[in-house]
Amino acid sequence: MNIEETKKITLSLLETFNKAGSICLSLRKAGLKKENKSDNTPVSNADIEVNKILTEKISEITPNITIISEETSANKNEKNLKNFWLIDPIDGTRDYIDNKDEFTINAALILNNKPAVGIINAPAKNRIFYSYATSNSYELINKQEIQLINKKKNYKEIKAVSYSNELKPEILAIHKKFKVQSCQKMKSSLKFCVIAAGEFDLYAAEPRAFEWDIAAGHAILIHSGGQLTDFDGNEIHYGKPNFRNPSIILKSKNIV
Picture 1 (cartoon, rainbow, N blue to C red):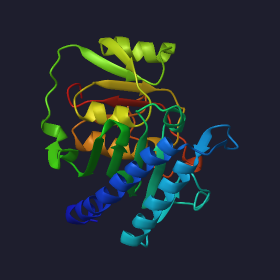
Picture 2 (cartoon, rainbow, N blue to C red; picture 1 turned 30 degrees about the vertical axis):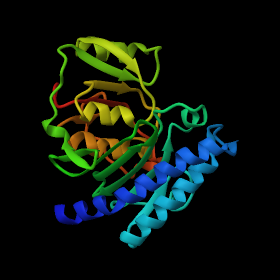
Picture 3 (tube, rainbow, N blue to C red; picture 1 turned 60 degrees about the vertical axis):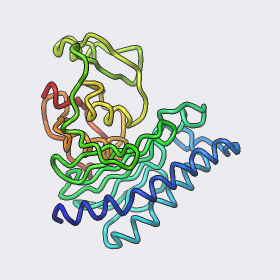
Picture 4 (cartoon, rainbow, N blue to C red; picture 1 turned 90 degrees about the vertical axis):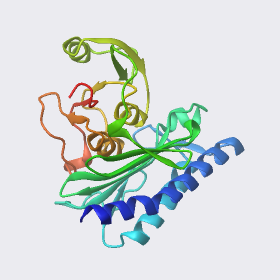
């Protein structure tokens, strides 16, 4: 698939992502229906509705590409996947339910086990990011494409984000290695976007999440000039057994 094809796919999904974001906000305002899944993580009627909206549109524009979603069991037992979609309808469901703003809507197209397209909408933050090729990673602001690779940081220190305020020793060691001077707690895939946008520099996490949690952000980050590897510097590939992630380090273009 060439750049014109991935661009067309990406741009054809933006309206759907905006629609899904509006529905997220309106359903939360109206009052959510909530339950816990078998792994004791929460799911809401909004997760299910957004999943339906995204999968229907993605199936329409790429009917021959398999879709893997966090919220359904469909296709998760397929072997030797190379080209497929990874969807996380609402990343940060607990924060979404708790009326916080960092939750995101995510989809990534994986080609040859690498992220080729990424789209992330943070509707409560009114921010949407997307990418479809090297140097083609953007934030859409007031209907204008802002190319992330050209965004410059406006601070001197090294700033990190973390999913918790209680940092484990291996994370602290990485922060020391890169001379991190400040760290801010941030949930959801929004942290990939703010690092791609040059607002922060680093994120590190031990193995703890699934491929659909990181794939869209991975595409946006690397297409902005950033880098994502495991703790040993190995490239991250997709379609692994059970879709589990290894350790990950995100670096902005400023420290790669």
